[in-house]
Amino acid sequence: MTDQPPAPTCVRHPQRPTGLACTRCGRPACPECLRPAAVGQHCVDCLRQERRDVPPVRTVAGAPVARASLPYVTYALIAINVAVFAVTAAQAKSLVNNRASALFTDWVLFPPLVADGQWFRVIGSGFLHYGPIHLLLNMFALYVIGRDAELVLGRLRYLAVYLVSLLGGSAAVMVFSQDSATAGASGAVYGLFGAITVILIRLRQNPNQMLILIGINVFISFSLPGISLWGHLGGLAAGTLATLGILFLPTWLRAKSQDTARLIGWVAVAVVALVAVGVTGATAMSLT
Image (tube, rainbow, N blue to C red):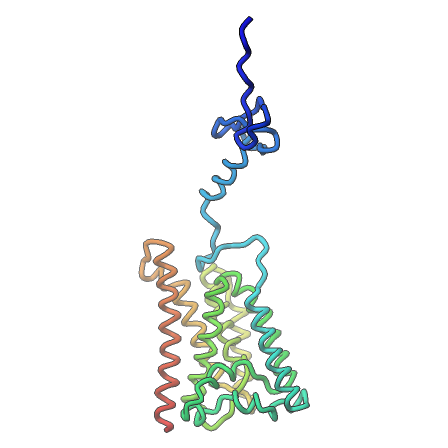
């Protein structure tokens, strides 16, 4: 009588004898370590390797597509704007006349004070708002437009476009509206209007609705007193140019890889930001 050879054991659980095996790698595996496949069954190690071998799905901007992605950057920007407004309202002890607060006075964009060295106003003014209606209008637009723009561009690129748009709006105010005190996220929001328009064109979708919306808002900016026309136009130009650099410039320059395309996009955003900062700096020097 010959001895029977020992039954094979699971590669992940050596104490478990098994008559099953992975149809991909051929190694013995227990039922707990196997998963149904199109042909046969694969072990969990092979499934893990398959996931690593499959390239991630990306948007046209090169951002990875998450199955359940939330617009965290948009939510964070809204939260910051609301928090800053709450501070100004608390300091002024008024929701409507919050401009009387010390923070509002310190952050509002007034070009002669920027020329005196108060550069933080260039960014800080983009998080101030004249009363709750101004805040609600900008935050509603940011919520509606920002979610889709963040999904396509990815969080870092989206945040970069937002901040570059803010810088572009401030630069335009510095050049063309030197006697005004300007505040609000409108410049950055207009930049997102331009960004989402470029995204629609890149996706070969009809951008007419966004173009009409931009036209209406620009007309309102021209028509109503007290609205920062130049802040809106500067933000619109900066956001549009930055997004063109991300989505179209790599194709125009015939980038040979995804990494090169992403690098070109970041360089384009940086160039727009440097131009905005340079214009602001040159104007500030001319005011001294």
